[in-house]
Length: 188
Image (cartoon, rainbow, N blue to C red; front, side, top):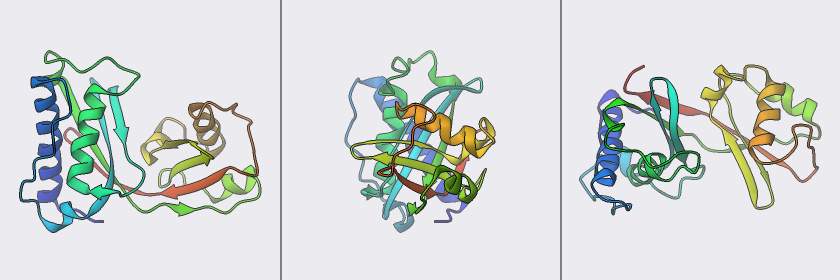
């Protein structure tokens, strides 16, 4: 999905509104059924990343397109600010300093591989987001993580650790999916 600048700004405002409403109360408020263009009402999956002074302050998202893009963004902006288990809830004092970054995910593409070496050869650094799934457990890295983990082996090893597995873990039952994102933010 290619969003024009108007749609990007609408999504950024919607994310800010969700966070502001969360600061005014302590629960996720229902998504406002405002008149959004068709592109933002179509099913979509998003991740919302919050940073303060370039440091991560929250990041939550969806892998699958299960609800309208605007609603998915609304929920994930709130979750990034108030429900990321790595951080305490965002405070009113912190709010003016946050940088909101949105990633709209493309469709998941299975990567059929028989070995980790084959997976590493198929990955496109800087382009692919990667989802690892084993039964009910999964973990993902957005394509932006390549800037911190530029080698495919390091990228995959750290993603396994994020999932709670050893970095050398391999199982024939592991499923691999790649996806791309359309990413934009306030201060880039």
